[in-house]
Image (cartoon, rainbow, N blue to C red; front, side):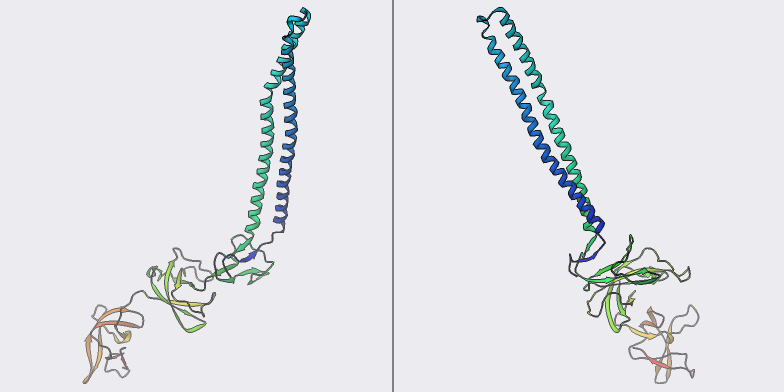
Length: 334
């Protein structure tokens, strides 16, 4: 897979129908706004014509007042009354112009808000539809997970129902592989981030891949079918070298280096003796006259061997049992 490729799609039929409804709603609101603007244009023109007509009547009445000197007293009074009426009528209509325009703008803004709300709903619906298509966030290999189906476990396939929080697919970068492992809770305190390790895969017994501990769990995992007192801590190791044979979902193990001593003499643990629990360690080293007792200084020790910092040299032959027991079997130190 390449970054951006579609890797999964949920059933979107219902959401796509809703999306069409929201698109139609937005289109209807847009059409309503266009119609409202046209209607308001006609109404505004009629209002302007009404104001202009009232102004024309007032102007005519004012012109008639100028003819009073040549008019009779009755006609003069009629002209005065007509001027006053036309002036009052014009001022009344002119005073209604601003509230009238405000009302038109409010109606238009109300329609625009309805349209904007419909657009927001459309965007939400589009977001839901887009989220139902999953795309690869990076280049890698798709690994299908197993799910519980029909009373048994099987690989996820088309038509399966996926619940919230259920993992059904993993995208793995082959150039940056990790090993998800566990360590016994008793040994977990000795594992730290940054420690070096060697990964062994069950599928390739001859393959050893250097790795580094990149994460150690803070809590133990569930005991599962094991006894309640058996707990393990999750550990994640990143492989430091890429190998084409390393593919996802292979089983394996890791040897974590807790401590090391380079260029050290290593002797079998059976060849190290002590006289009493607090006695100094010593070994029986082969000499021309037989095995001689020699005190040694020990370094790192495992269940099988011990590092000898002083007292032995590479190539010395040591006894695995106290001489001169017949069962003694010398072993050469590496």
